[in-house]
Length: 504
Image: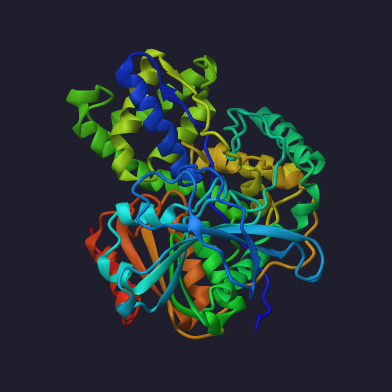
């Protein structure tokens, strides 16, 4: 039974640039494009799944997933229909696409583990294979059917399209001067108008986290499960908290990794990209300084930081092809979301330094429209541009590396759709079955948001604080304490007795 409540969240997309030139740099270009998109918006793209729609309560028709790289390891795909508006269940329908990787050992199967990586830009159906590649433990693999799904509005589910320009990016541009806020406001207004004028405009009021949680429960019912376990990252963590609030007794073991605050993907979340980036950047600066013989970009962390400002200012004044200072800053945010991409970011700096970088196209079929829709249907987005002017001025001074971008105007300030229901408010009502994981230096969902979510969930949650940088902790990071604790909870149901600190 659905429990009332009111709030919501997301993940995010970046401008993409890459080196160009000889065969080696072309390889870098391809890796760069994939990693930037993965860092902020999505898992890699896959073609559409077969359209074999079922409705909740009817048999699902499973087929091999089209376009998944081999080995597919038995990944299966299907679709089902769901109400566009749950207040009118017999009215218009949308299609939901999802995938299943059956439990490796049927004798040890506990149930289903639904997955969400925290993105809304492209298909997520191959996520089970990605987690296997990252080292998902066999005990977890044995215990669960792994279920990934494309939320309404995105991927292979019924999509929102906003006729966005090819160069569109979700993060606002860095406002070098106060006039940059008004320039960005004009761009944001145009993007919102594109969503309003698109054929999918009637979908917009219904692309909400509350409805995605209802869709999730419909998938549970279609799978014939009484309860579900859940592993969600970033936006997925907020979705998991929303589902656990609406359907507390239909949850089994819930892991929320890299949480926003209980308000979800709101303006506070956006501004915190700047504070999170400044917390994690010293990790990159120390690494790059230690590699000065290789990269020549600064022999001390202080010199590296100075180089960042110099390169950004250079590109503000003289963009290289379509790469300007705003693009450069968001590339840095994206490629510091994982320590594993530090070498790639160092090469990008070299290319920026010698004038040879260029922005490649996003992967075919990639579209930020669904992400924009779900974010802008959340509470907490100011409608007055003056609020953004003041916030940009404040954050440019407090967080000069990224603040004047993260606080700048989104299309949400001009959003044309009106939600039909309030946002779900995250509460502590329900069983104590949630494990939260949060990196201390997370530049995608800054640590204070996780603490606030922990407070909202109260007795239901335990918080695992990880002395690690980057966005997403479990499997995406290397901290053995965190990876072991999450795996043990999913496989054995054992959580830490209380909030716990995982040292580096």
